[in-house]
Image (cartoon, rainbow, N blue to C red; front, side, top):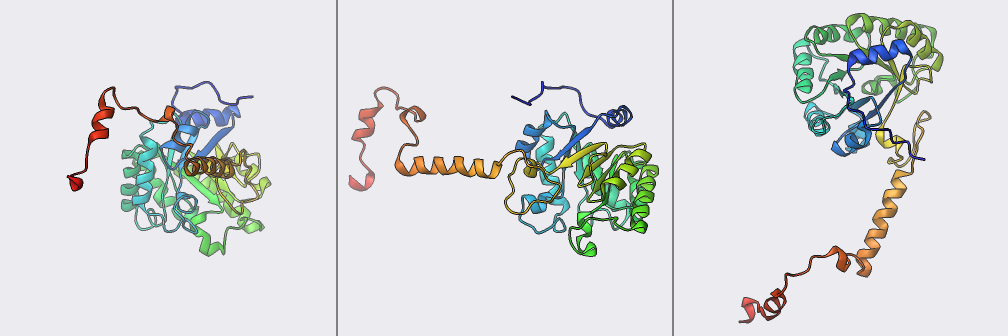
Length: 290
């Protein structure tokens, strides 16, 4: 049975997401790092995140910290060229929003000029000045709390967060502070499900969970994780819907075998000479032999 929906032409907007929060409609978000993934996902999801996770998913880094603005701009531009119906959110990479409001605005504004509809940045109370500066410049901001990958060194690894009373209450306070600063939505990552549920029920803005239970306003997973394109360990919260890695390897293996045994390309996959050129080609002699 096919799950592909009928194509939708309306653009997903921030006011529409707010309405869905009020109506209880679940939001679907996945990552897109290039035109291919954007075209595959756009008809199926509501938000495309050009995530700095491109660093460890596609570029071979151990984490997101080496990802630069130049890298993010490159991948955002590829996604934006497909003119997605989904809302396009671009991740602010490490050090792109830490130094000054002016630099933060310049970097985020560059994302919007390249086709993003909004930006996402990690952190709570310490990032409020930057969030307010962006919102004042009409740059929509999605917040990100809980397990924030750019803080991997401080957290001592990719671990579930907010497991003490103080940390849980701080997360709730940060969530409401980000809402009041102007964030239109929050990603909640790697926190207990009950805490995410409490944040979601007390906020006016939607929450998008990843490893945060089922009670968020929506869910996000990495495109490559959903399709099983990543080899090795997967986080507990990842559910794969295909063995993409195995399927693609099998297809390449069969093609390589056809090349090696001479069955690819077939005559049907080859171009014939126009009539009358066969004799000309056959009679040609290399200059070195004349």
